[in-house]
Length: 145
Image (cartoon, rainbow, N blue to C red; front, top):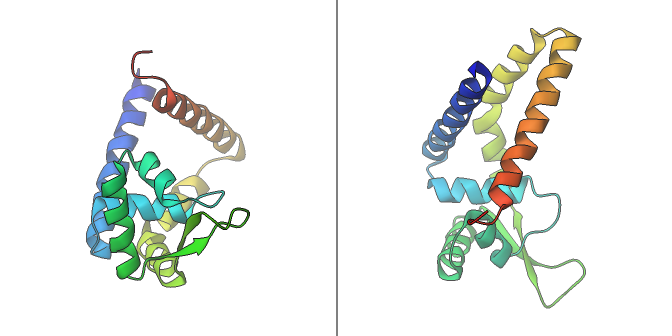
């Protein structure tokens, strides 16, 4: 049970960190969540998909995208394979701002990881990947399931 409690503590700390990052960047928490989705997306993300990922209605997602575009954090670009669609790309300025704000956290986590033996690091990594898959599966499950 200690592992589950520790993981819950990590989740709470991550939420607090997102709020602190929003304050440091002078952005709303939803704006930071959107930028996280865009900066770390494996494939291009459009406005509708971004809204879906953030659990927003279409009008709210449009307002969010418009606000981030006006602030210079993202730009709309044609989809690479379907020119009728738009995707959202973070600006270099936004990427640099976020990376700068995250640097102390990244450095601290890297320092903590450096204290692990290779064997410990392998176990922790395996656990975190399994926990991450479990959380993603839970998030993707139907509400009634």
